[in-house]
Figure 1 (cartoon, rainbow, N blue to C red):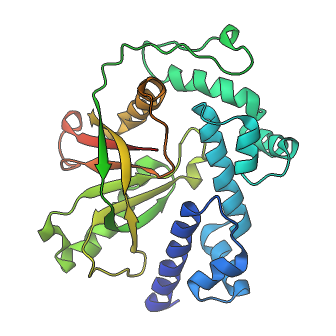
Figure 2: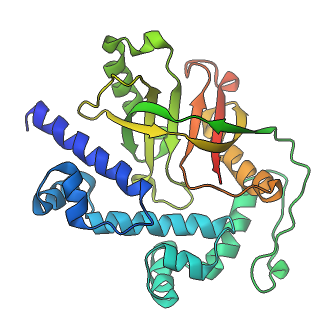
Length: 297
C-alpha cells in the first residue's frame, strides 16, 4: 500500500473512532459511519475490521459494555441502567454477555470491583461483604491527603496518534508524534503534552486499551496519516498532581476515584480522563510531575 493511501485510511478511521466514543448513547449504523469516511459501507466494514481486528458492531458493543463496567465499578449506575445504556433490551441478555466477558454477573462485579479498587490503595479497607444491604454500601474514610482542585478546562485542539495496547507501551506513539511535530515547528509554540486514557486497565483487555498521545496545536494544523486532530477538554474537571514514576499513576487514579470522588459531592462526567505531563519524561522517575484530569458533570 502506498504511503498516501495508507495515510488516507488512517485519517478516516481515526475520525470514525473519535466519533464513536463521542456518541455512544446514539444509534450508529454502518451506513452513517461509512458516510463519515466517504467509503462505501462494504468497503468501510472491511477496512475497519482489517485495521482494528474487530467489526464496527463488535467495537461499539465492546466499548459500551466496558463503559457499563466502569459505571458499575464506581457505583454510579444500577445494573438495569447499565444494561439499557449499553444497548441491551433486557437485563438478562446484558447479564449473560457481561458474565461471559468479565467472569461474573454484573451485580457481583459491582460489589467485588470496589474491593479490588480499594485494595490498590495502600492502607485502606473500605468494603466488607457484610456491609452490602439491598445494593452496595461503602464506608469511606475521609482522611485522604490528596490535594484536588476543580478546574474549568477550555476546549483544546490537539494532534494525536492513537496507541492500542498497555499504557506503559505507548512510547512508539510518542516517538512518531514527536518526529512528525518537530519539522513543523510545533514545539516552538511550547505545546501542552497530553495523554488521553480512554480505558480502565482493570476493565479493558490489555491489547484493546486505547491511549492518545497528544500535542496542542493551532487551527492551521491539519491531520496527516496516522496523526489525527480532535478537540478535548471543554468542561469541569477534578485535577490532582501525581509525583513520581508513571507506573504509579494507576494507584493515584484509584485513590482519586475511590476516596476523593465518593466524598466530594461531584459526579463523574462522560469525557475521557487525560494526563498533562508537566516535565520531561527524561527526568528522574521520582521527579516526574503529571496532572491527572478527571471529568466531572
